[in-house]
Length: 188
Image 1: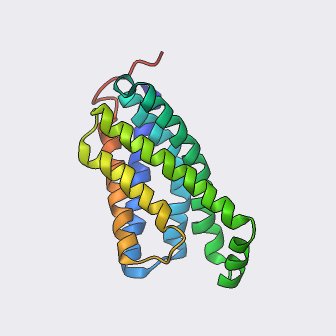
Image 2: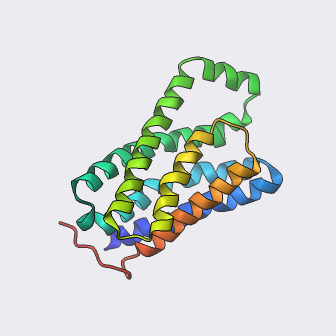
Image 3: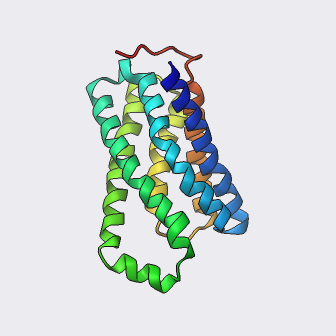
């Protein structure tokens, strides 16, 4: 019960660290402060995904367990990517960033993003298949988080800000549903 509550609270905070900076960036563009919040907030992703999985575990079956496993690996990889993009590369000269991406760093970033996209899509499908969570935030989770990974290397626009807000709202909504007060989970 404690792990699920911890993860759900991490999910609410994660949703806020995605949505609020995204909304701010619609007006200001990317800033050091919004990048820091986004970069550090990703550390909350693994506990949040765990709470979501625990909440639906009984109905998710083997597919849900496999989707969660791939998603967890993708989250681990993409947490590093998001931190690097938002907190490290933000401060470098654009020519230095381009040189880094032209070397082995570029394919490594793409590979990490690819695992994240695959895991997120699978986990989003498992959320929809299990039918434990509301359909709208379940679909928003799978689609908006996938779009965040796809849009991460591009310049920020009002559209990327909108995707951040939708992703953050979806994560927050699902995490609130996953709070143990809504449904207790037996851990085997």
